[in-house]
Length: 484
Image 1 (cartoon, rainbow, N blue to C red):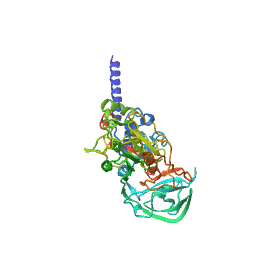
Image 2: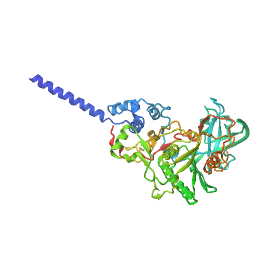
Image 3: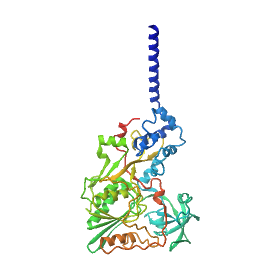
Image 4: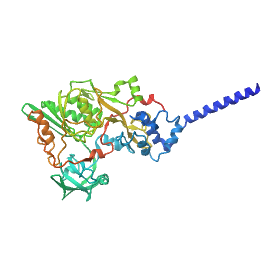
């Protein structure tokens, strides 16, 4: 009896000690040197769209903070951890990014970058060639380039005298100051000339509204808008343009998104509301998140998954045109929120697409900071890391969002270096095609290029997170519901 009693006491002590050890493990704090890595793992575990497909992000991967700490300690940098956790990077997920300084990220999201004002595209000189050259798509107003002898259509083959190729282009074009060596374009041939332009990057806020005008053809008043980025700071400026269109009695709209790589989902929703107006309150787009966040939203606040047509911006009435057809110009640089406008409008009005196939970015992100809620408020003052992981896929009101290979016009019409024209002028080839369809003047045939070049990169795609689609803040309530 005495032995049995002693055994029971020892068993009780052993079990108590075991659970005490477990409690100690659960109470283990995150070492200071692992704080950034801890933020990265927990943010991706909660919000990453492909979280269920990444073994090391599984909810059951680590039993406690101690195990997680041991795992996080195995990475040499926060960047190494971040990219190791992405789903089949860079194939399936080629868009998620991390920044060591969130002020740089915030600048990109608002259109503020170190920029000399030359917006360009790089092309391969021949199929499969390592040699590339650039052509100027447009010049940003009030930039260094706007005061220099360089314009749309100019060709450059070298930087600081060094010919561009697929291995050196990024380093050559990353400098604060550099000289572009120009070339002539003749029947598909790139021939260096003696011209060069010295350029300097400054902190530049690019107004995405590059051109807006009204063209009159008999009974047609055609509004033309070249819109190059969805930046929330310019939503009211955009609304003012549509107010001008409405005041002038615009009957048709040509929306030029060929160089628009995307931006804020909210701004895209506002633009769609300005084009229409008759669908206020109806579904423009729906976000699809990972399974556990979808479950949370569906049980608690399903409206946070929906983007609806609106009739106001911050209490100011939206100037809507109530159109039933819109003409949209695209290229292989048209991405994310630009594609969202096309796809979101299609269930409601006729969308006539002119130009080339788009990028195919049907997924979006949100900025995650190291804070208790992963939002901007209360973020850590020990570092400036922030990440912009893909968190959702977006579909239209009909549930369609499978355009990951791009959205194609009926007849692709890529821009021709031998016949570029002046942006905004009725003779510019893509705008001319739209005008001819609006006025029933017969389909304008674009001049066939002397040579077709393979696109390589462009200025915006070279920026980290340059082809973005994002919501402006983390949804409310989620962090409080999920606990590690």
